[in-house]
Length: 460
Image (cartoon, rainbow, N blue to C red; front, side, top):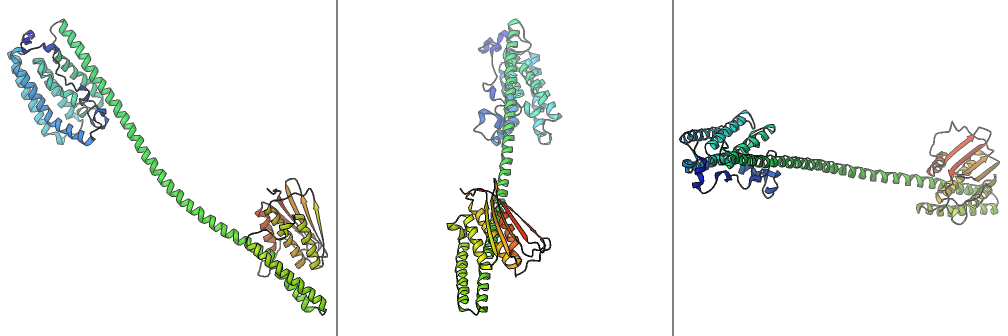
């Protein structure tokens, strides 16, 4: 090998010559999104991945030829100062071999499997050629730079860092003035440059891996977010369907409840009023006494007016007229007295416990139950006496209606027909509507006892 000190004629100390590109942080070859390689690079945020990949593809095809040409030209210019005759012959042979290797690689590229055995062989042969060329002339380090660029494209992950370190050896020898180091200061420069090259290469590789992991985690998070958004959109659609279904069911329930309310009100007011009118008119028709006839007609007229008022109140969903001005005990007492006068059956009303104002719905339910129970006694019981008891207790109110009539079998009730049978079911439905219960005790010939129990809900 020629005397390395003669290179002073080139205008500088080759041991201090740095042919490493100033943009080393951006040199590709750092796998998994190294700087300069697609979206993992913080320096290429203004480039799309497609543009970066296209640039890398073009450079991988033309770059080796360009760098080999530049390295060969620099070596030819400095051959007299840096190379012996034998090194020149070796360099020429290796340049031809490197060119042939690159031509083979470019021609066979479409048939290769990414990071396959051929990729590894190509990288190894090229490194060996670059190492020997740099041994012959340190300026061939320009060609050795390829080892930094495409290591991630050619080698699997576990071979990347050893390959980077091997390239760092070549580059450190080139920057230190050639291989092998000739003296103590030369060795010191080689070791320092090797540490610098390997530290930078491995450091940037580590940052590239971390950046790639961060990018992959971000992509996974975005994918999960998209899936969550899709599930949320589907849930919103399902909720919209359920909401529409609930609205329809609520409307149907409201219609059914209003029908049930009107049916109960008609039965408890209009039907009973019409029954009373028919009874009074029939009595007037059968009576031979003019005064009695007028009395029956007056009662029928009064019942008709009362029934008309109750019908209007039912349509307007107002409470019974009896409760408009009187509390529940007073209204029940008046109802029992009027019923007794109308039917001729002795009626008694009793209140027990401390009287308290109840919620409107509770009072209406108890009043209607009492009316229906008395109407049933008057129509079916053939009783001589009936009693109504309203009992206020700690947490509930009880309404009991008893008679000494002919009774019936509660377990063998006749089927409901167009002539009646609505009363018992209607009374039970009214009690259940305010969270109450209704029980009936009766035996043929022993009278009937009806008991309705509802929660004591005070008027607010």
